[in-house]
Length: 192
Image 1 (cartoon, helix red, strand yellow):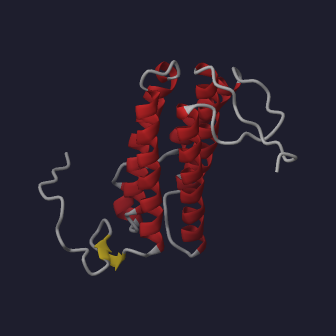
Image 2 (image 1 turned 120 degrees about the horizontal axis):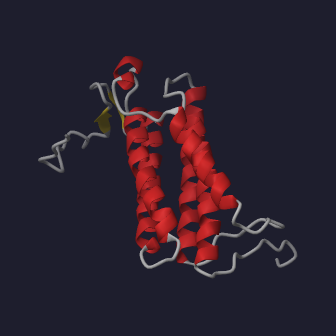
């Protein structure tokens, strides 16, 4: 169990932070950017959870979003742990997490109308919040890809998980719009 007695330590006042294992790095480092984006995604999903309250989509999507928030916390910890041996002893994203997202995408997508155009973010509050979370997820994915391309070690499922999660958030947004009886705004390129 984690115990947090102090909210501030003043240790980061000079622009440095400690990764899991004690290594000091700049708060502007690529690794910190990655787990910061994952944290921002988790906050966006907090908006989703709040907007789901009172929505018919909550019964289907509420437990999934809660599970994903916990998985994202694990992913953030994984990204904050550069040492592979230490990371192997901590909660991590595994292939089963990616597979679970794929199953949810497939199941919910069967209930949705076929896409005939790109969808603009909107379709009610819940759907719009899912779209916001999706874009934050895509940014987190891009940052993790850059981290790996720079030669840094991350868990093997970090990129596949973020990639699949962004797809899932898109489908969840569509499902929420349908459940809430909201029309999905479609891209109309001539309306410019």
